[in-house]
Length: 313
Image 1: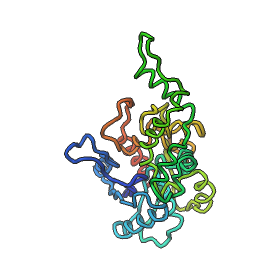
Image 2 (image 1 turned 180 degrees about the vertical axis):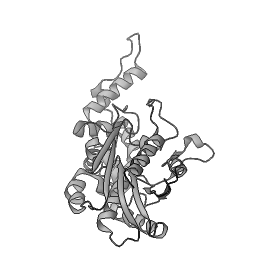
Image 3 (image 1 turned 135 degrees about the vertical axis):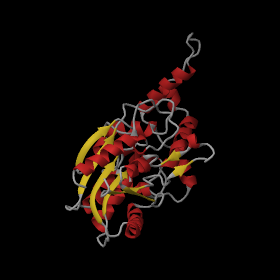
Image 4 (image 1 turned 90 degrees about the horizontal axis):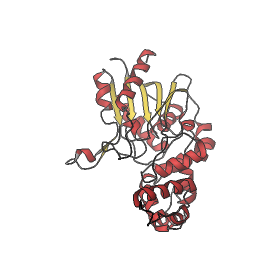
C-alpha cells in the first residue's frame, strides 16, 4: 500500500493531539492514538495536520492547505477526517483551488455535515454559537437553561441507583425534584461548556450547515466522498456525552453523543459503527466505567484504508 497517502486533520473539533500528564499515560487523551502508527505499518504516508483549536471552518481549512502545500507537493491525497475535520476538508476541496497536491477522496467519520441539534441547544440555552463576549455571560446563562425531561428522568433513575435505600426508608429524588435543583443543572452544564466554546461552534448549528455551508460548498465531481457514522444505544447522563446524546436523540434519533447518523451521511455512506463520538478516533485511554463496548478504532481505520486501496486510491 505504498502509493496511498492520507491526511488526517488531527485536531478535529477540540484542538489537541494529546492532553493529560506524561507521567500518567493512562490519563492521557490522544487524538488518533495508535491509528497513525498502524497505517504507517501498512505502508501509507500519514500526515496528521494541526489546525486551529476552535477556529472557523474557513480558518482551519486555510491552515490545512498551508500544511499540505509544503508536505504533499505533487502528491495524491486522501483525506480521512473525524468530526469537524470533515467540514474543513470539504471547504478546502470546494473553495481552495490553487493546490499543488491532488485530492482524490474524502472519507468522513462522525462529521456533522448537517449540523448538530446539541449545538442548537447550546446556542439557544447557553449562548455558545453566538460567540459570547465573556465567559461570565455564558456562565450566567447556565442557570437559565432547561434540561430535556427525558434526560432528567434518567438522572432520577441514576440517583435511585446511587442513593436509594433498599429498605425503602430513604426515597430518591423525583424528576421534578432534580429539575428544581439549579445547582445540579449548573454543575452538569459547567462540565459540558468546555467542549462547546468559541468560535467554531457557530459553524456547527443545523441552521448554519443546512442554510449557509452546504448550499455554498458543492462537492467536487473529481473527488470521491465516503462517510461513516456512529451510534450507541444510550449514554448515561453523568457521562460527558450523556446530555448531548439525549438532546440529539430527541431530535434526530440514533447518534454517537454529538452527531446523528443522519447528519454524518455524505457521499457514499459506508456504515454505522457502534461507537460514541470519541471512540471513533481512539481518543480516550481511560474509558469511563459504564462503557464496556468492544470497539477497536484501529481495526476500523485499517478496514477503511484497505477499502480505499481496493477502490484504486
